[in-house]
Image 1 (cartoon, helix red, strand yellow):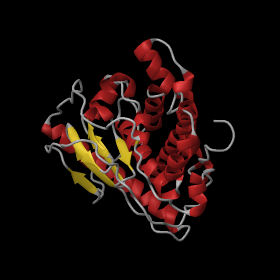
Image 2 (cartoon, rainbow, N blue to C red):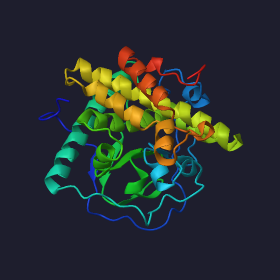
Image 3 (spheres, helix red, strand yellow):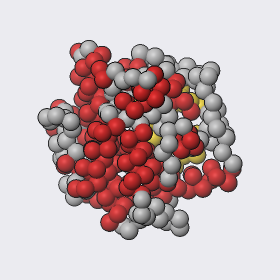
Length: 308
């Protein structure tokens, strides 16, 4: 990806070197209404604006089998988002981390450019998310999280959180190297921010109160696949800006493949249990990223109608 020398986002909050503290406590809330972003989602919130957010957190879930932490527990507040005694955080050289921090800033700026254009086209302002860089442990609007959580978006404070050492794990443990694989992860989490603005996440939080665990898992898959599709829309935009190098899209597709629920479960336990899937299979994640990339249209990211 051609990113060196490009403008960085001003919405980067660098907390590296700081340590979070305290327990989960009450999950953060976000109230108020904002005009809906007119893309088909199948959720009530997308038609009626953003409803009151009781408090949920959507996590990329790439390493939840490795840590034993189910992201759906975080969605319901069923377990605390707290430090794991077995979690370790690879310490990258300071120079390498600083370059990664610059990279994150550039990618986020490009997502801001895309979504500002999309919202402006319908006469709306785009409230840009803040991206928090942390090391080890962090306090978020959704509680205390650590590096083992993986990158995540917190609707309670509209921020994306990432420990940069995760990228080393993405390469070494999950076989997904390359800067565009890293960009895909960020664009996916920004996709959750779009879902928060359009009402998808608040709607899911409301609906899941009456769902069984298996039903909630199935709905979570649709939420996650839409975020993958939005990441693909951003990849299309990056291509239009002549930012893509040869092999970039393949890097993103490989990352999507490596973090599919079926692939992760088979890697960790030798078999897959489909009813526990909550992010989508490798094939699904690749397909929805490709759909967004091919069309470049957020309106084609309706994962809530028909089969996925």
